[in-house]
Structures are given as structure tokens and as C-alpha cells.
Length: 282
Image (cartoon, rainbow, N blue to C red; front, side):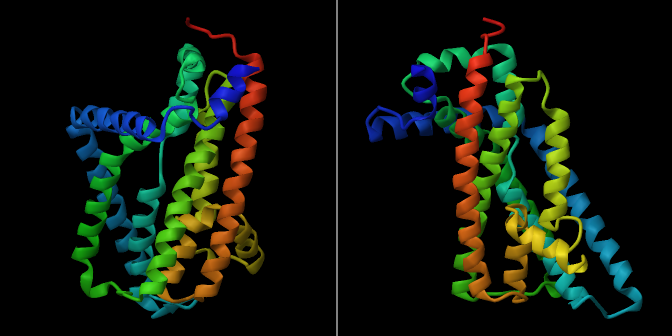
């Protein structure tokens, strides 16, 4: 029972020591990422290509009509570019890492360490994705620069602050969601299929394929109570000025509610999962 409490609890180390260990883990994975520079570059090239295809596709769709469901071509291009920028900031691949640790038995060594598994794995993931995320942000900004004449700029400080807070909370939400998916490996060896299904549902309700406002009102209402829209659609709409700032503030409360709920689900699943854990591979 002690292990369950230890893994999910606040570390007992001093704050400075803990932060030093945390930063050391992040630095180690930065160095590791730098050894795979070509892979990182190849992925970023693919991202830029996908973004260009989306811009060209919507340009073709708008060829014969100036406005579609309240969007001009300029607004749609801005929505795609800004939304994808938010998307690359919040994404992670944590579920596969956790599933592999459980499957290979590496989880066992964390049950006797002073640093909780959650603290370690979150630090590891931040270190692992930070370089790729930084490069993705730069590549997204490069695309925005290419379409600067078609891009709408919003420099309102209040709006940008709310958007920044929303994207940060979306990042935390995505980490927790991936963590929860990874814990399913306590009951099944592979989580790739589950992750892929969750990813597609998440991208749809985030508005990653097209603005959610193009859907029936009921679908928009459902998406507003789910956490996914706050990683793409809602902050992009805020940026475009299509929703009011107070709606964005309400969205922050919904995000905080989901973060608390997901943390509770993680604690519950972790507790049940450890009962099944047999330390395979040790």
C-alpha cells in the first residue's frame, strides 16, 4: 500500500533538490534528442508540408465563395495557422512511454525511489518533447511568415494572456490524458490502438480538421464541455475575436475542472493497476 501512496504523492525531497533532479532529467533528454537531429528535422518537414496542404486546400474551397459559415479565407488561413501552432505546443507522446515501462517491468524500480513515478515521467516527457516542440513552433512561425499577407494579427494583451493560460492548461490536460491512457497497459500489453482512437476523437473535437462552428449547434455545445476544443478551436476563435473574452475565462474554469477530474482518474486507475502489476521483465 505504501508504494501506491509514494508514487502519487508530493516528493519528500527538499524543493531545491527536487527541482535540480527535475531539471537534470529534462537536460538529459534534451541531449538525447540532439543525437537524433535528422529524425526531428524530418518530422518538422512533414508538419510544414501538411500545413501547406491545408492552406492550399482551403484556398481552393474558397475560390468560388468569399465567406463560408462566417469565415473569410483570411480568417480560415489564420485559424489553421494559429490553431496548429497551439496544437504542437500541447501535444505529447507520454502514453507509449508509460505503457512500455509497465510492460517491460521498469516501473518497479520507481516504486522504491524518493522521486515519484509521475514526477519522473512528466519531467522525462517535457525534456523529450521540448526540443521537438521548439522546432515545431519555429517551423509554424516560418509558415505564418510565408503567409503574412493573408494572416490576421491580434495584439490585444488581455486576449493574448487568456490564450496563453488556455494553451498552458491544455498542455497539462493533454499530459494527464496521455498518462491515463498509458496506465491502461496494466490490463493490456499495447495501448497504440487506444491512443490512436483517442487521438482522432480528440483532434475532431479540438477543431483540428475544420472549425467546429461548421458543425450543428449540438456538436459545438458538446465540444465546449469537453477539454479538447481548448487546445485548438477555442483559443483560435479567441484570437480571431469570434468569441468574447468572458467565454474564454469560462473555458479556463472548464479546463481546471478537467485537470482535477483527470488527476482523480489517474489516482484511481493507478491504485487499481498496481494491484495487478507483477513486475514483468524484472
